[in-house]
Amino acid sequence: MPEKPHNFWQELKRRKVIRVIAMYAGAAYVIIELSTNIVEPLKLPEWTPTMIIVLLIVGFPFAIIFSWIFDVTPEGIKKTKSVEITQETTSKTGKRKVKVSDIIIAILLIAVIVLVYPKIFKKDSLEELKTSGERIAVTVMPFQNLTNDTTKNYCEKGIQTLITNILSNNNEILVRQTDVINSILQGKEITYYASLTPSVASTISKMLNADIVITGNIIPAGLNVRLTAQVINSNTTEVLKPFQIEGLNKEGDIIEMTDSLSIMIRDYLIFSILKKDVPPLFEGITGSTDSPDALRNYIEGMNEFGKRDFPAARERLLAAIAIDSNFLTAYSPLAASYGNQGIYDQAKKWSLKAYEKRDMLPKIERLMVEYTHAIYFGTPTEELKYLRQMNEIDDQSTMVFYSIGNAYRDIYQYEKAISAYERSLEIQKKWEIKPFWVLGYTFLGSAYHKTGQYRKERKLYKKAEKDFPGDPALLHRQAVLALSTGKNREADEYIEQYVSVRKEGLASDAIIASWLGSIYGDAQILDKAEEYYRQSLSMEPESAWLQNNLAYFLIDKEINISEGLQLVDKVLESEPENYLYLDTKGWGLYKQGNYQEALEVLERSWKLKPVYDHDVYLHLEAAKKAAGSQKN
Image (cartoon, rainbow, N blue to C red; front, side, top):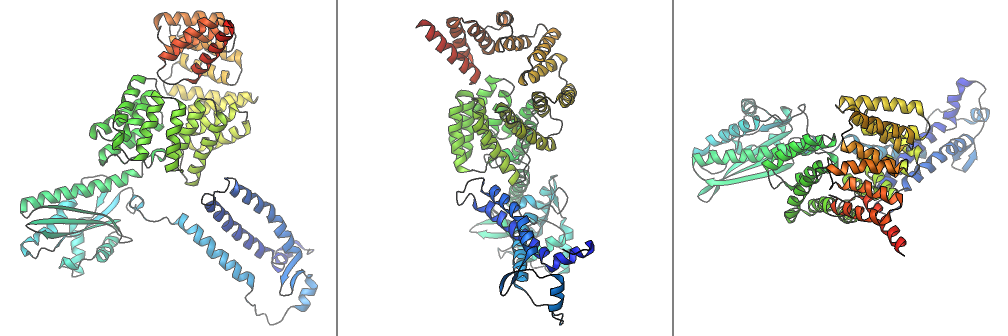
């Protein structure tokens, strides 16, 4: 090693260490990319790319050490000569020959460019054409009169003007004006529009910085006339969508046909633009409408759904269905928006409406409707049956893996839930998609917590903070984790943020206190949980929901079963058919050893439940077993 530090860089180059680092890095990148792409086709274990990355990292320092000590020569691998020996034997010609390593580096550089290029320069598509701000820019060319009837020549520019006017009345589309287009055509001495090829039209469209060019023809069709049009990508001259319409060879009919053709083109453009805004979780299941307005309302509704503003989501989804009653894709999230707020009668109503028309849908959307029906009329086992079928059709659907996680989570099979949730997040990361909502993180975090994987849980929440900063569901889980791991100061900060966010959401102090009780209860700090549950009830003593919260807590944690039963008996006086309150009472009776009475109450609860409830199921099974043993 050289004595002077400033000679170190020269020595690294002489010993070809820099060259080896460059070759190693290039080769490593190519190997990682290839390993990622061959895992699924070759049915390799999912951990294969991770193992390869670890091996490459481990091998890196050895590559540097060996490159310092040894050199590859035509005579084989030899120990690198010292500086003095090298200086004595170095040729004085100064002319450098091309070495094998140079060729290898060049090949690796080309390979890296080939792999990186598609990620940086994505293929053009209608949804990605955005050269004009947030709107797609369109040029409409004069139509070609191919009828051999020169009296129809006026239609060439007339149809161009009519289509331009209709497309201009939309905020998503920016239409270049006809006088500009026609001036360019005139300047190029193009007055015979039959010579206006797609290539020429695309060139003019690009001159106007437009993404789409629309060309068309007027063609004889027997006694009728046919209008044809093509929506063309200006950059590639690819025909994205052809259209045609036929009618009588009369001026009034031609105008009416042009209006219809314009609307067809407009709806196609708007629909295509809107589809890119479909939340990733539901991408690919929007095929049951051709109405841009219905799709727009659906997208807005799903965005509100993602924020967990279910009333706002329902408003938009109902608007979508009002526009297109056969837009069955909107029915399932509409049902869920009701179900997530416990409005099960409406949830079941809309689920049934979709289920009755499911045969009208393509397979993937039909399965989604059947899955939703299973949520409200079946069991998690039935849900999983439909979800697995959906997974067979598309094994890259984040929504399907997320829903599989939910089904397993609902029946407390947390390890299987974790696997599905993790897969959903892996796909989202792979495609650089932000999770649809925070529950993709918090449900996985809760499953980690249940299985004692606190380190994974903490790491997960750090990622979640970037996508959903200040979300109350995330703050709830972060507070539970901090309390569970003895980080009390950190927990206090999360709880302070949580209370602030909930107050901004106009939650009452009593409700917030009850939620704080659940945070401490989840962290198994039972004295603080009881304190907050009692505090919430003292603020709203007539609230049946708050009374049941405290009653269930006292019974389930076996803190004061008698008091819990007194509280739940009180609320059952006003709501005797409430299955949750019956479950609380039945569980209390079971805890007291009154197994037969508990069984009767829990059976009533099970019959009255609006949807599958695993807690009620477990309570009922425990009572059945205990009552049976007592009889024997």
